[in-house]
Amino acid sequence: MTRYRIRTRPTQPFAGERTQTIPGRGLEFYELRGYAQGDEPRFIDWRAYARTGRLYTRIFQAEAPARFTFFLDGSPSMKLLGKQVYAERVLRVLADCAKSEGAFMWGGGRYRVQLESVEQGPSVLMNFPRPRGVTVLLTDGLDELNWSRLLQKLQHVVLIQVMAPEELSPGFTEALLQDIEVGSRMEVGEAEVKGYQAALERHLLRLRTTARRLGSYALLRVGDPIVPALLRQGVLEER
Image 1 (cartoon, rainbow, N blue to C red):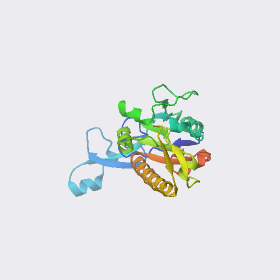
Image 2 (image 1 turned 90 degrees about the vertical axis):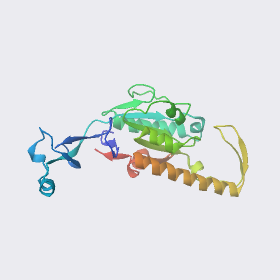
Image 3 (image 1 turned 90 degrees about the horizontal axis):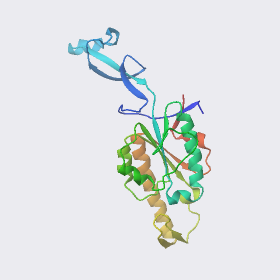
Image 4 (image 1 turned 120 degrees about the horizontal axis):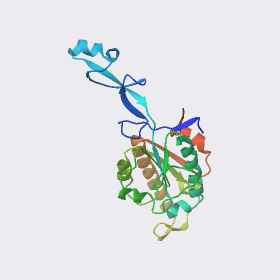
């Protein structure tokens, strides 16, 4: 898996990102800042000097080792319809891609082979300081919590939402459903199924929009070929 790496898409540099601002290093222009003694003359922006009469140094982004912290949702809903097992496979693929840079398990140490899911679910992240670097969150996204607040707290996140095909497109018009997270039951008919699908679409849109603004996002259906899906949705890229 060394052919691929996790795409971080940073917007503001902070500890753990793959980019950092170093004058004259890297290829991607970042900003101009006032000239400081010791800056190399070849990086002075002479056009800016001609316009303003002041010296400015061109700052570029350079690549630096990233740090990834993996959080595997182990809440009750993840144990249904093969989601947990599939999510573990996805995590192994991503962690193998990140090992050369820095792959860690939330609440544990450096990623090895053993995986530990978090039974309390993603809500537990609200009770702890933000992990360093990039948080890779693998979940079905079905916990009742303020997802926008959680993702914004993490600041830079790769959100992998794992859902079963049956959850995305229920193949029934009448059923007795049980919420495994809280234990409640509800009879549903065709109108409720349509309402569920509409609410789910809104929920997925909010998650996708927020996560992509802070980092990246992929929705994986249990059984999807993992690497092609992650490449197609912009979570993985070639080195």
